[in-house]
Image (tube, one colour):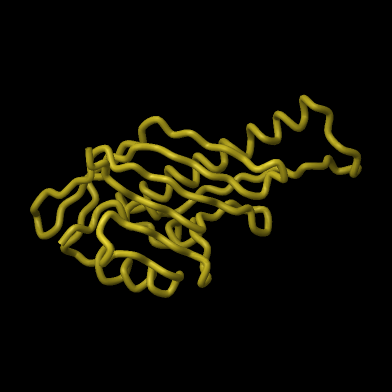
Length: 170
């Protein structure tokens, strides 16, 4: 049973920035750049937390990181593990990752690149993921998994709405 890569769904530290200052006037170009930089940093924290939650089984952190509706979607390398909707995802988390047989042992996100839409309400990313753990004491890992995803800023918080994991076949 391959269960890793799902660690790539954990919680998210949410930092937001508004596109307008308190007085309502548009920001200067420098202020807008700072806002975009803050949003990119917030998105990176969400992505990192979406994996790191598993080290301590911080399920609340995980669930804060993803869209909790039918729009949530994940493609995994195998077709049997496709997730459609938050309810299906929650079922997997409870069955697999909260199971005592599962233990996350580490992860590394490599070459992470984050892009923001012009509106600042949508972000997309790509990276390589090394995701390590154990199932019933036997090591299991994804090494150099290709990982892409889309986040939306909802009510001032970034959440993952879609992810895709794959391995190259050359």
